Each structure stands twice: as C-alpha cells, then as structure tokens.
Image 1 (cartoon, helix red, strand yellow):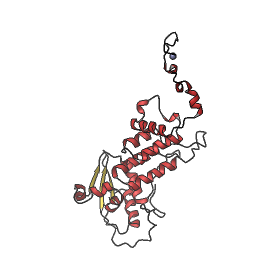
Image 2 (cartoon, helix red, strand yellow; image 1 turned 90 degrees about the vertical axis):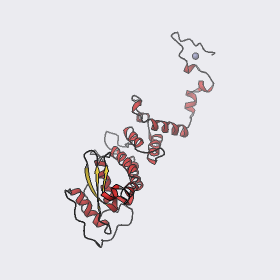
Image 3 (tube, rainbow, N blue to C red; image 1 turned 30 degrees about the vertical axis):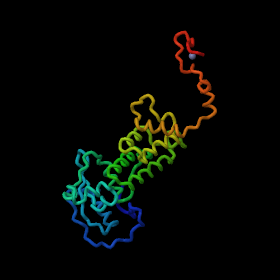
Length: 269
Ligand SMILES: [Zn+2]
C-alpha cells in the first residue's frame, strides 16, 4: 500500500481536514528511518498539524523491529498506549514501548491504519485475508483500541458478502471458520463481539463441513460450547425431525440399544 498521493482519510471519522497551517516545524527524523516510517511521518504532518511531533519508538517481536510513531497518534485511540505513555510509566519516560510477543507484520498494518485509515487485507487471489483480520482484531484487543476493532469487524462482515468468483462457485462467499475462529477465541475474552459474530455466522450460514469432525481436537473448545448453546437456542424442530425421532417421542428406546450379536432386543419392548 502506498501512502503517497491522494487525500488521506482521517482515521478518527472527522470530516476531511482543510489544508493544514503548520504551527511547528517537522520534527527531526530519527536515525535509521526506513521509507515506510518516513511516509508515515509526512502523512501525519498533513493530517495532524497540531501534533506535538514527539516520536515514540515501538519495538516489536523477537526480531525487535522498530516503528516510529507520533505519541499523539498512538495515544489517540489505544487505551494501552495511553497508559503506557503516561509519565508515571517507564515507557512514558524512555519513549520506547516494547511489544516482544506481537507480530511485526500486524503492528505494521496497525500503524498503517493509524495514519491512513486503511489497511490491506486481501490475499493475492482476491479473497479476504481472514487470518490477518483475526490477528489484527486480537492486536486491537491487547492495545484496547475499540474503534480499530470495529473497523476490523467491518472488514470481516464485508468479506462474507463478497462473491467468491473462482473455483466454479460464482455465487458462494468465503467465511471465517476453523483456524480463524480459533485465533479469535484465543485472543479475545468471553462475551467479545467478534466471538458472537463467529457463532452467529455459523448459526446463520454454516454447513456441517465447517466443523472438522475428523479432528475434533482442532475445534476450539469454548467456541464449540458457544455454538452448541446458540444452536439450541435458535433450534426449530421441524416435522421432518419429529418423524425421524418418532420412536424417541413415544418413549421407545430401541434406537439406542446395541442388540448384541443376534440382534435380539433384551429390553422391555
Ligand atoms: Zn431394543
């Protein structure tokens, strides 16, 4: 994605700003700055002219990849950064925030979104990259950035409405399932709206093929319980189902007998 050219989108939903009146000089650029960071800073100067200009170093992952982001931008939506960068905390004094357990590729996209309001989440084949969206949503959970998470949900929902034009199934859509569900459940707390979305998608659109019965250990346990609960709440017992289970309805237990080798029923019936 390029940040150059075009009118940048204000990520905070305010009307597109007028051409800025710069009150400050562009801050001196940190050393060993890569082009992406440079683009970020230029872009931010266009959008947020009153920014303090103070730059925070965010060091991400085992590879310790460095991102240089405006203090004001980091704090504007993320409760995590708001706290971490307050003067009482070490990070607020050193102006360096360490995120050793997070993926640099995800933080990279988060920073892109902070400055441009856009994030690329399409695979090479044109399909929605649900795995990345799930990762971003969970990053938003950690950073406590509700608006960012809501935009990720927008992309998830939008992805489920895009016709999948390959594989000879022009009318089918692709849906987040299996590993994506697992990722969302591992990165969010009970009651998370993204968890509800996963369950509701399965209730409304899911087929039996969405559940990997051959590898039950691969199905997220909490999700399986939520889904079972939701299916029971939403269940409608049809006439067909009543016919199928007519014996059970009449209290006849033979469907559940083994009947041994000779096939004779030893029960009361
Ligand atoms: Zn029997």
